[in-house]
Image 1 (cartoon, rainbow, N blue to C red):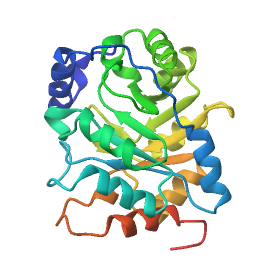
Image 2: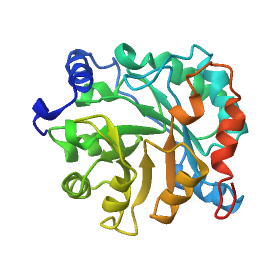
Image 3: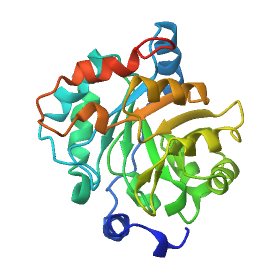
Image 4: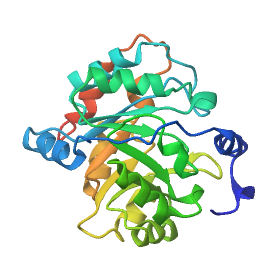
Length: 260
């Protein structure tokens, strides 16, 4: 793990809480829904593959949304979402394992568990199709990737720069997310994805994460090589809590080249 002296205080607080969070009980075994198949289906139907995120709040969000997570997920799928991401981190994002269970029961697309997982026992909390592992915060990434796969998860390894990408590839990751948000300053730069994507092998499924809020952003990330996009805040829209989640999702899933 890289030094945390460079991390934004909010991220350092999240990690401190994550280290103390216990794992689950019995070992989880998952019959996962394939993300690659879901991406293929979306593209065959003319949709941009979007992983829409159920995120009640975050340290960078201006507000919260208390909507039923299953209803939010169903609205996202209606808008064309290829998969759903669910925050299970409770202290800073308002997530829970129960929310993920309810979402996975409600939809038939792959569901990603998004959390700050530090050690193997924390894998055994809830069944999901995909599991986020953040390269920067894991001491033995190769072992954790292997442990996730042994349980049936599809591990999505998140990186922010080329050094972390190299670590992810060495760990055997074939599903990689590039986070446009710098966890040191919590600033977003879509150029991050464009820089890292040039080094990613063709046989890796590549997801652009963070900062994608418009059809123009979608097209930019797709042109840079993104197989899919992970979008949270632009769909959740924390402003009033009354916006149309389905319309917010559809606006991005239909952002094909040349369309507005």
